[in-house]
Length: 401
Image (cartoon, rainbow, N blue to C red; front, side, top):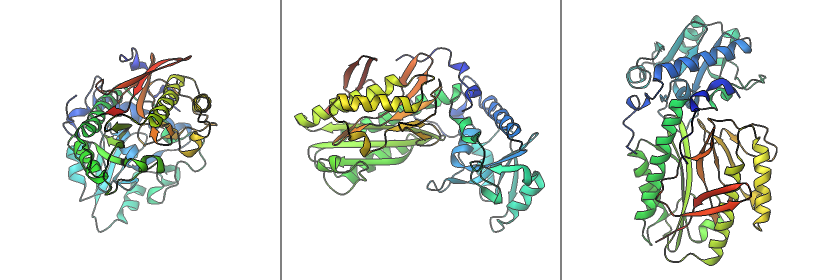
């Protein structure tokens, strides 16, 4: 699909190609990075005012990346918390960190952004609380992770802080488009290079390499061959060789944004039973995507897709694995269930991942004012055209090699 018109209007009002060059240079889009950050700071301050607060302390990797327009505060990627904090008060913003991290963060992650650095010795972590107390009224402060003794924002507030990041700004959309293309190119390149007899671990290593050279963190790197595809919904790679059929799935992250996709490869003609199941699952996936429209709740979308499972002859399969949902600064910001109340809006991004035993269909989709845009579609992967009463959509086929 073509890019949407009028996306400049899809920003925080909703409330609720080439390899990436690095952390700073790539973050300047049609709206420059400073303008993006200033608008986000305004949204945080408005949130504080609505909730009778005066300070917000941000420590999560997700919210740090969101508020800084793509900066990274992690060293250990496996922890929700990063190595630095952002403190937002009514008239100032601060970067709080220890002396190990301060220089790199200032030079590579938040250069030219309005964050005043406050540091302490790595061996005196207790100083962080004292510094926090000197910068704000801690009795009127909250933290996204409950850091430094502050209450966590999810405790008792109906106006969720993370809602601020659900709708993408124009520069975030451009970053997402590049990420979607490069992640899909990485995964599909691996699919074209695999040979029968390669182990799942070899294939996962190749995917990790293709991702990392594009500055993408492969947070989920699943590979299954042959009988393991039907046996496990989340197949961590093993030393088993792939003989006939391979499933490979990726969730990658860059500048805080998450991208997900799955592809299947068959060496030689596809087994007829697998082909029938795959045609069914892409029909369900198409139903998910086509039903994802502005103003519709995720629960409505899931219920209509469940109807499609039944129409395809697999009424119980949706119970065997989560169906995906809203994505962005988390792999899944909100999981879609039949009772999900979140209403989709233009500028939001979702990844539906329906599965039927032995197969799966998954891409990452931007909801635009003109409808869904598949961010992870390269145009070089074979596709099946799915025609449904609600519309027509091309979905990835099983690649025969």
